[in-house]
Length: 85
Image (cartoon, rainbow, N blue to C red; front, top):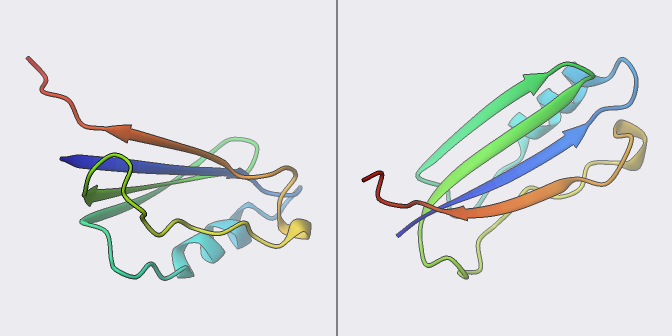
């Protein structure tokens, strides 16, 4: 089964690049099958990681960044892949 973990945060005013750099630098052990980073207006950063694991597996996730780097707590979601047919 493939599980995708989504991590999304909104940077403090003008700190979007810093938050993106911070997210990129976070190590996950073990490494996911795939990892992608996205950015959006209002200095939002999204990280999606893919894992070959059961839905409820204990998987490493990105931590909360320093409070001064973000405007609110991180949002997290977990999804499982489904057959497209």
